[in-house]
Image: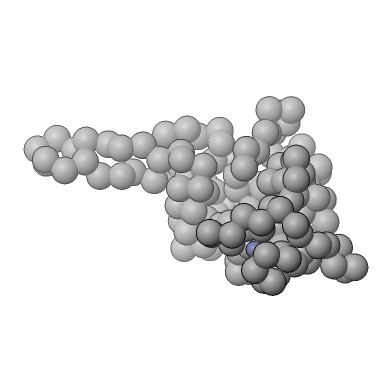
Length: 144
Ligand SMILES: [Zn+2]
C-alpha cells in the first residue's frame, strides 16, 4: 500500500479531505486493490472474491473467510478512527527520521501512549524506521 499525500500542503487539508470513515475506506480500497481484489489471508490470495451487499465485507471463494479493507493491516482491530490514522500518517510522512511523540499526540488528539503505538505501527508498515548506531555499543538499535 502506498499513500500519497503530496497533493496536500498541511494537516488541515488532509483532515478536510479525509473527513469521514467512508472516504478513508474508499481510499484504502482504492490503493490496496487498485487492479483487483484478492483474498488477504496469507497462503490464500485467491482472486475469486465476492462483495457482500453491505459493500464493505468480502468473502473469498477459495478459503471461505471474510475480510474487509482493514484486515491484515495496522488498522485491523484498532479502535482509533481511520480519520485519525490518516492524520497521523500524513504528519509522520513529513518527519522522515523520527517523530516527536508529544507533538503527534497533541496534533491528532490522542494520548502519548496511543501516539507512540501508532507511530511505531505506521513506521513499520511503511518501512520508515532507520537503524541508528549508538556510539560505544556494538548493536545497532532500531529507532522508530
Ligand atoms: Zn482466501
